[in-house]
Amino acid sequence: MGSGFRNSLGGGGNQIPNGVKLLLFLNIIIFMMVEISGMQFELFYSNFGLVPAKVWSSFMIWQPITYLFLHGGFIHLLFNMFVLWMFGKDLEHNWGFIPFLKYYFLCGIGAGIATSIFGWGSFTPVIGASGAIYGLLLAYGLTYPNRLVYLYGIFPIKVKFMVIGMGMIAFFASMASANSTVSHITHIAGMVVGFVYLQSKINFKYFKLWLINRKINSLNIKITKRENSDIQRRKDVDIILEKLNIEGWKGLTESEQKVLHSASKTYSQNRPPN
Image (cartoon, rainbow, N blue to C red; front, side, top):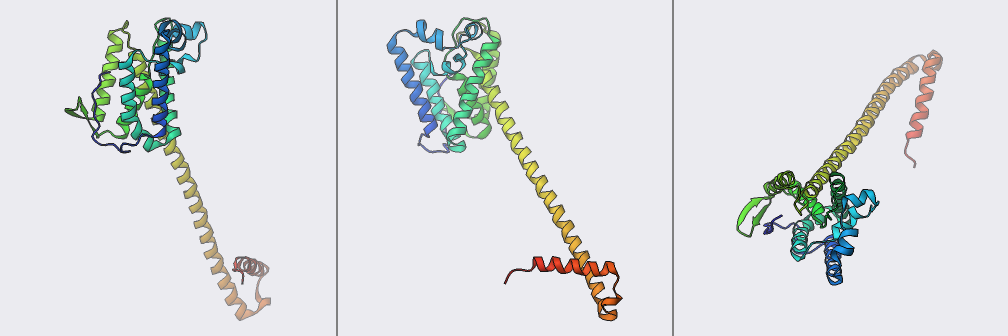
């Protein structure tokens, strides 16, 4: 991924929300620890990076999580953290702390699992937060499609076109360069996982709205039926009362007397207390 974005409209201002702060802190601290140790390949990349063959043969099931916090050099870290800061803060301001972190790790871990499946025999470590970062880019493009960013601070481009372009680059690169040190499959998978999750969330939201509307409609139908029943009962009671005034209680049939008793009980129950 090439760097050089500048956002034209920041929804959350300059304030960095807590989720983005936490991720920035963890990534930077872990990077410094790994660099100071001097055992990047011997210890960290081989055991905590994503090595697809080891995930399956040695059951290193933690690797689709831990690979997100390892980076292959300062430029790699700088770019991922820059994109996290630039696009993540508006998403977290919009979604909140927990939903933002949930989405970030869902994309990152999902991309890691997909990478381990497609490259199941590979012993080449995959490291970096790019799977989660590409998921953030996808979410940002769907949330703010017409917001402008400036490539290298010069060329204005809408976010939706930037995201489409980066997705296409990752897709064709993954087909053309199987031996590349950059895992384009991870990038694509991060976007795909993010898209599926956001779409399922939207569909679930519509499903809940449909259930709520159905309950409201059912309640309205019951209320309408009850109101119609009350209207008919009042009409029947009025007719019986007119007959009562003319013929007296003895002139009423047994069923008419029951209607009056029932109406009397109903009206007395619904009468507001003094």
